[in-house]
Length: 157
Image (cartoon, one colour):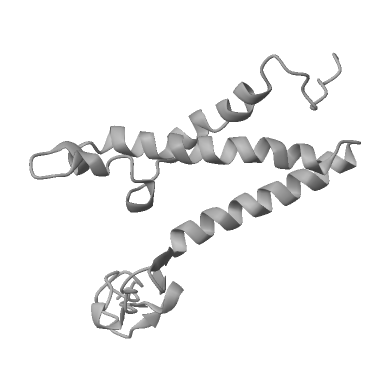
């Protein structure tokens, strides 16, 4: 007689798994033990909704600017150069992310019964990372085109 396998249904004792889920030895989950899902990631400050997703994006932007400023100063540059670039890159990235979202989910705005006027409303809609990655760098690039760039070129190797 072979010993019972952990994946067999012969063992019925629940085991606590990652995130507090109870996983039965048979490989399934006991859905009565799943944590309650949050109602929404939104807090209302008066008439203004504050979304957790937006706070995470803002925190990421702030941390990226601070780290880049520190690295820029360590390489004999000015921290203000990083802020100047971010002031162009962030709005262009948000616009690009929203354009990508509208282009990949047009049924949300242009299907029958929908309001196409809402398509440019960034505060009501989503963002697509690939649009932000594509359009974000074009902001600072177009701002410094033809001007003397504060960013020194890498020496030839």
